[in-house]
Image: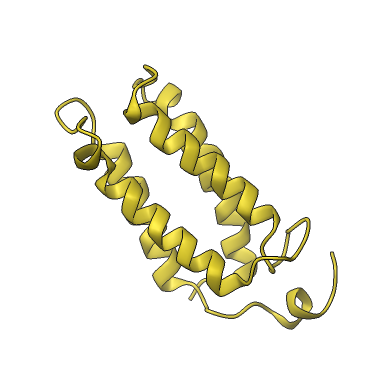
Length: 121
């Protein structure tokens, strides 16, 4: 199982990877193929900063709500090539990263450590 502390680290790394993926993998063209991972990556960074877990700036969003948002984001990312009509051009990065995000949620413990629940950073 993935601890909330490890999940927090993964959130920041995956958020940055999602933002950079279009340029790293050569599909940065200002279409939905580019915008979906960039928007999901940026939003992951923002809501991670406000989640009640380790490495957050302000602990406002309950961790279980965070996991639900991660799950929905993973599903959207995985399905985005077909939802937004770019599957004929690029789909594998979206599918792989979306599946990773879903797996991370399913493998994460559903509660944070007592440190994250009781006190500030």
